[in-house]
Image 1 (cartoon, rainbow, N blue to C red):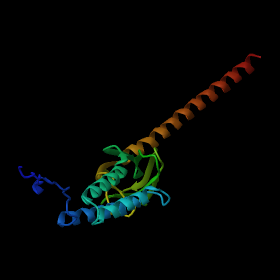
Image 2 (cartoon, rainbow, N blue to C red):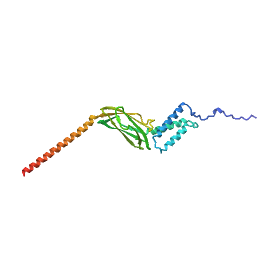
Image 3 (cartoon, one colour):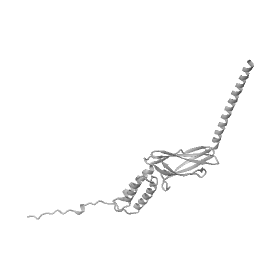
Image 4 (cartoon, rainbow, N blue to C red):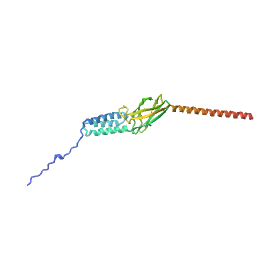
Length: 225
């Protein structure tokens, strides 16, 4: 009688799930970037925004060494935070013409998300006097907010203005750097006053002519009687 054959399993055919070690310089850099983005973006949200807790929970998972492929959580969290910042857009013309020696620089900031957000706006110019150029601006959900900064100068010309929209702490850019040109034209402002003066002269001439004609008509009626 032939001996019983016993099947022996080949251990080399067994495959275990491969996990990415939660170590290394690249992971450390990703965690640092995620932490900075979390702190900066959270400052945009209201204190009662429930997403702040969600982001903190995701970050805790991302930095945990017990989680398989923690880098996936890091990347996912950074995308969520990036989407929040990406919901803010700015509309402004490339050139702004100001009549006279002063005027207002206006930009429109759109919040495309369904929750209120807060940003920091900073305008700067080497040759213009800007009133309150740094401001914290609260953006209504799904709305557009206009920011108006008074500007003045003593000379005519074209002057560059830099506009930066960042997180409230100023540590992270929300929209790309913007540069516009302010064109100051005092002659245009003088022209407006001149036009108004000429209009007054025309009205005065018309009123004088009408009154003289009426007086002459009244005198003619009296003589004929």
